[in-house]
Length: 205
Image (cartoon, rainbow, N blue to C red; front, top):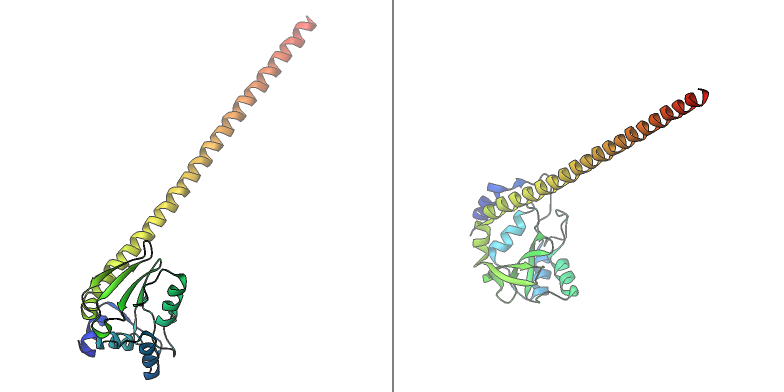
């Protein structure tokens, strides 16, 4: 894919970045390639240049200049390696959430497939056969990702609403029980008073 072809895909689904961000410098690329001992492919490079112009939630950074505020790829890699459940060749580049990532394999460098890392069972499986395929499928993934996120928000809302309504129900029941208790006790008090008055009258007679 060319630079323009990658941008054409991103422009379908992403909003323009309103701030002036710095794309990765030559020094940033050299440090990253030296750390992972690999050569990044063109599509990978184009994506990380273009995210200085587009808002892509979840994308990690290569740029050490002014970026979108997400963590650097190198930082996340070191963090996960230190946690002890990371495969050394895997380079995370997109954080999905809950510790899951899209990764490429340093062993294959510029021709690496894209892998999905699951933190739940520390499993890695091939997601796309190439980075180009991953970019072309990005609109489909992002639309599904947003839908899933919306469903999760809706479920949290319904769970909150359910609990809220349950609390209201319990309050009504509690109030009703207290009201009945008050009515019963008031009735007993009235009966006792009536009996007491009758007793007093009988004594007078």
